[in-house]
Image (cartoon, rainbow, N blue to C red; front, side):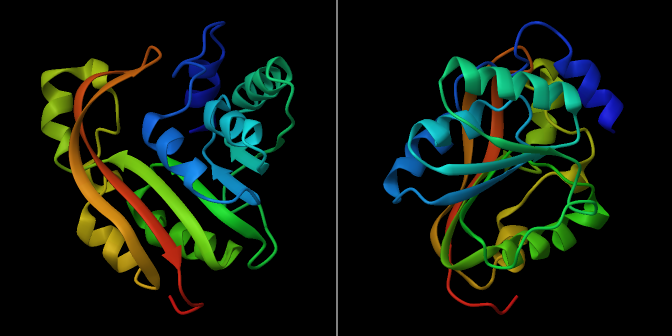
Length: 207
């Protein structure tokens, strides 16, 4: 999988642009800056945005090419990121060490999805925030009509509100919606699709 992302991020242009995801951009400023974990941060557009708002950012991704471009973007914006290469099987974070987690199109293999969500939950302190936008299972029909919108082809890697409710049942649901959106994010997210949008506050350690 890392080879796919290294190839995508090896282009000079930023695959999904340099601007943050609009949902993440809307919601992150609602919360007091602290420490934030950014899984699957790619070329760093969302991590850099968080850093510009005063958050202490820890990003990770499978791609060293993504890491290189994220650090370059951080330099352009005069901010810093701690950026690790690997996935949640390889990386360890201190329990309850983050105030927020940003999950922006962090699509995991079906057999890992709930496991990874559990590990991320362990990283977040009680009262901490998750902001998530990812493609819905209903997105697959949109992708068939217009491959330029992007997103996984495997329906099990896509999200549903029921999955979010089950995986984050120890969270206050500030927002949970399935929405049709028109994306203009770099080269690989362009067109009409369907996303799950979730903002939640961790209320306990139970999972």
